[in-house]
Amino acid sequence: MATLRSEIREFLDQQPVKMYVDGEWMEALNQGTFEVRDPGDGCVIANVASGDARDIDRAVEAARWAFRRGTWASLPANDRAVYLHRLADLVDRDRAILAQLESLDVGKPLAQSTGGDIPNVSATLRYYADLSVHTRRYEPIAVSGHEARTVRLPFGVCGFIFPWNFPLLLVGWGIAPALAAGNCVVIKPAEDTPLTTLYFCKLVQEAGIPKGVVNVVTGLGETAGAALAEHPGLAHASFTGSPEVGRKVAESCGRNLVPVKLELGGKGAAVLFDDIDVDAAARSLAGAITLNTGQVCCTATRWVAHKKVVDRLVDVACGALSKVSIGHGLDEGTLMGPVVSEKQRQRVLGYLERGEREGASVLLRGGPHQVEGHPGGYYVKPSLLTGSPENVCAREEIFGPVAYIIPFEDEAEAIDLVNSSNYGLANSVWSSDLSRANRVAERLVAGNSWINAHNVFPHGVPYAGCNLSGMGGGVLGPETLLHYLRAQSIVRPL
Ligand code: NAD
Image 1 (spheres, rainbow, N blue to C red):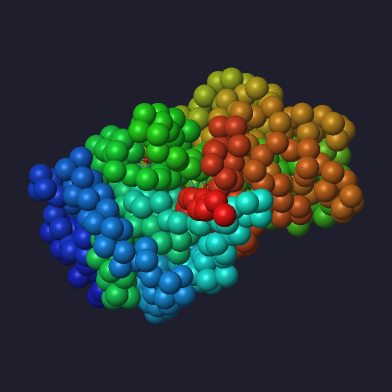
Image 2: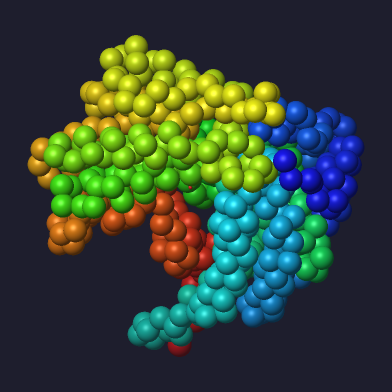
C-alpha cells in the first residue's frame, strides 16, 4: 500500500481531528469523538470531534454574525470570485493530499480521487465564481407610473448535510453556488467520511475567506445532522442523502419554513436497443456499476435490454466484471475498492440474499470477497442478476456493485419498465438511431436522461431528481446559483 503523505499523518494524528467553526479549530463542546475507519482494512484511522446541537448553535451563530458583518455578503461578486479562485488554486495545489485522504476515507481507487473527485471540486468553485460575476443582480421592471426593479440578494446562513460517497466533490457542488452568491455556510459531513471536508477548511483558512463564512460541524446524523436541519437560524437548507433521511430533514425545515433542496437516491436504468455496439455498451455499463463500488446515486443499476442483445450483453459484462481488480483504494492497480463500511457491506449482501429468495436468477455470483493483505476490509464482488421487474433488487436502491437485467421487446415496454420506479434521478438510452434515442430520453421520467453514455456531469447542465429522488431544482446548473439568491422587489410610485 502507498505510504501516507506526511501532511495526512500529521492531520490524522490530532487527537481528536477538530471541527472548523468561526475560523477556529475546535473540539466538540461535550468533548465527544467518533471513530473513522479505513474501509480497505477496517482499522481506525482517526478520532474526530463529535458535535451536537450546541456545536451546531455555535456554528450557525458564527455564520449569522459573518453574514451580518457583511465581510462576505457585501463584497462585490468579482471580489468573492477572487477568493473562490484562490481556493480552487489551493485545491489544485493540494490535489495529491486531498486525493489520498479521500481514497483512504472512502475506499475509492486513488486514480478516481486524483483524476475525478478532487479536480471536480476546483472546477466547480471556478464555474460558480465566474458565473456569479456575470449574473445580473438588478432587473428593471417596466410598470406604468412606478420606478421598479428586482434585486437578488443572498439568503444568509445556508445549512448543508452531505452523504459519504463523494464527500468533497459534493461539498463543492453544494457550497460553491451558495458562497458565490454571498451566503455563509454550515456543513455537516457524513460521519463515515468527514476527513477531506475538514482538510479543505485548512485551504479555506489559507485562502483568507473571512471567519464564519465556512463552518464545518462533524458529528452523527441523529445529533448534529438533526440539530442543523431543525435550526431556526437557517435561511436555506440543502440535503444530499437517502429519501428516508431527506423526508426528516424536509419535515424539520418545513416546521421552520426554511426552503430546502433535496438531492436523494436513485435506481437508474440504462435502456439498450438492438442497434448498438453491444460489446462497447456492456463494458461501459460494467464500468458504471463498479465506479465507486456502485455507491453512486444515479448509476446504471437496471439494464433494460432488448431481448436480441441480452445474451451478448451478459457474456461481455460478466467477462468484464469478473476481471475487475478489487483492492485497497491506495493499492496500485485497484479498479474497485471496498464499500464504505461494514454496515454498507451487510446492506449489499442482504439485498443479494433477498433478491435470490424472491426468485432472481444469478448471472454472475458476487458477494463477499477477501483481498490479500487486507483481511478486515469491506469488500464485495460485482453481481449480475435477472428476473422479474418486481424483484426487490430491481426496485430498491442497493448502493453496491449490483446490476439487474430486464429484457424488453419494444420501445413502449422499455419506457414503462423504466418509469415503473418510484425514483426519478437519471437514466440512459443507448441506440444508434438518434431520433429514437432523443424521443425515449424525453419519455423517461427523471431529472436526467443521458444518450449513449451513463454518469455524465458537465458543469452548466443541471443535475436533479424528481419523485423519490429529490426536489428543489438540483445542482450544477446555472439556475443553482439563483437558488441561493432571494428576489426582492423595490418600487417607488412616480
Ligand atoms: P443518509 O441519508 O443515511 O445520510 C446522509 C447524511 O444525513 C449524513 O451526513 C448523515 O449523518 C445525515 N443524517 C442521518 N440522519 C439524520 C437525521 N435524522 N437528520 C439529519 N441528518 C441526518 O445517506 P448516506 O447513506 O450517507 O448516502 C447514501 C444516499 O445518498 C443514497 O440514497 C444516495 O443515492 C444518496 N445520494 C444522492 C445524491 C444526489 O445527488 N442525488 C448524491 C450522493 C448520494
